[in-house]
Amino acid sequence: MTSEPAPISDAARHALEQEIAELRAERDTVAATLRDNDTVGDRADEADELQRANDLERLDARITALSTRLRQAAEAGPPSTDVVGVGSTVTVRFADGTVETLQIGAGAAELDQSLVTADSPLGRALLGRRAGDPVSYQAPEGRATAVVVALGEPSAGQS
Image (tube, rainbow, N blue to C red):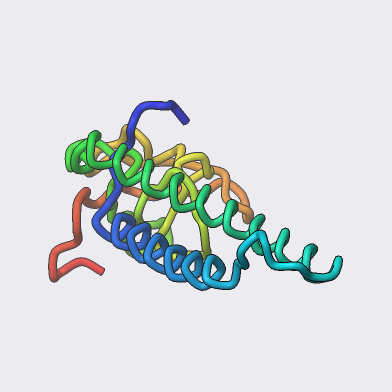
């Protein structure tokens, strides 16, 4: 992947914003458990305190990373609706006739059946394609083909 700011879909933006809100709530909970350094305790208390401080650092780092990604996405603007790229919503018809609407993402933090990472075989095959373009990619079962039906959010007639 390049270091250029990449656009993200509205769904991905919402998911990142939701994760940041959850992380901030968790951070507040952890921060509230940290004691004043003047408090005396045994070694177990010190170890527990150190673990909570490490947790706080981990949460802060993740919040910063997600906030940076949101800022970069805002700088990149909306995903293209002409050519498939990171952040695109693309509707694809597979060789068996099934039609799916997918999001092309830079990475997946959790399992999301509609997210295809840009570095996956299908993701790489879709990048740079336009509506009507056929794609071929290596699937776990072997070579597979699909056709790009549309880019952008699906209309009421698409699935």
